[in-house]
Image 1 (cartoon, rainbow, N blue to C red):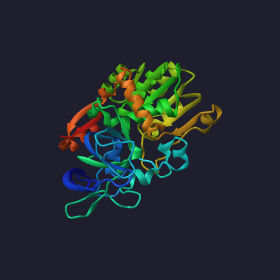
Image 2 (tube, rainbow, N blue to C red):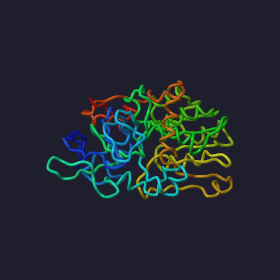
Image 3 (cartoon, one colour):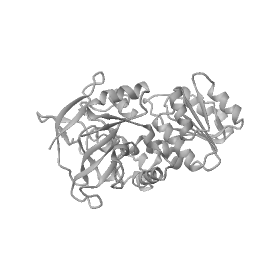
Image 4 (tube, rainbow, N blue to C red):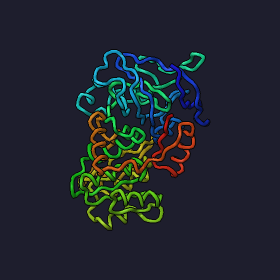
Length: 367
């Protein structure tokens, strides 16, 4: 069928919306009509080849929409079902089998290589040439997307799909870092470095689990003000204050957890320096391959401190997205406050506003 999609043709050019054709779903696949899709920093990173992906390519990995067709063998999802699309995984490797699919042994091929596992693409240009797709098993910067039964999560029919897409990545990542990966407990302390959509989601999750001290660090005063409204007990402007000194002045023994949402080595080092005995620094923010971090080995070793990576909040989307929806409905997780809507045709404006900080979580709406 004919669709419209935003195509990255080169890293130094704006995305262009063009007509394409999309395949019918194969075995284990779904055809989704997009209602909305979030714009994530990882999309910008792929666009600029910080994480190399083939071009021309259709990006997008926070899609929400309605199932129009299902492929052979799909029995638990039906046409008409509303779904949120998340990351893709194989389902058979040791980490998938141990309920840690965000560390799938095939994570990069299934999410960044731009093709199905057999090397094919579901998208073609009018002249028949292939356009790379299958980014995060979806490529949702399009009116329709092919995704896989593993990365489609059925959500309640009365859920507003316009806000649901970011649950598939950015919101899931921040909340999951707190609830799944680090398992923050009531009364503990957590510092969040970077108050974008991921960091603010971590702050909301920290409040839900009952953390006693929730410290937000950012350079943007508006985002720090929102962080305070969403649950931060202390906000620190990293441009005008020394974050490490301020945190250790308040909590001389250090914090239980630090969550870096920036991917910047200097900021990660600040998070490590804030850790108390047996504290953990979780690295959530993406960085280019080869990015190095320096750390005081004595500080880490003598206090039993830990540095760990966190991908997609260590979350199983099939169970964690419904959990976040339930928290939102209970008024405990107001992630919709992070969202700013844009029409699909304004996709380049949405990326510009995300980069400048004018928007925390842009979401594209389709007719």
